[in-house]
Length: 110
Image (cartoon, rainbow, N blue to C red):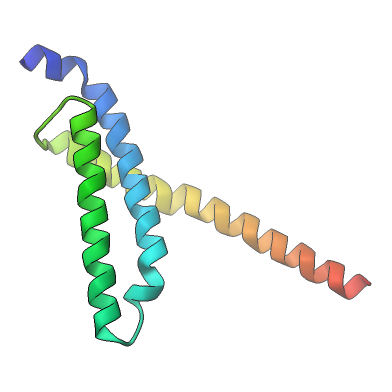
């Protein structure tokens, strides 16, 4: 069994990087509810986010053939979340801001 786990470490690492990015994206989606002043909405969003994150991690672990969490897997989750936060999210926000600026300049030119 150890050879099988060693052979699939790369696939597991990559799958958990993707899982970390998905969890960070889900956090961004839940952020308005997490910042709401009503505590039931905040608690519900927090519980749903935890359940979704756990299910994404478990799916990634079981689909890659590893059933237990190891240190390199936790580091892969962290790397995926950081890649999303520092790269993909900033890219999408830049594109959205450019589209808004172009739309506003098109309105003013008419």
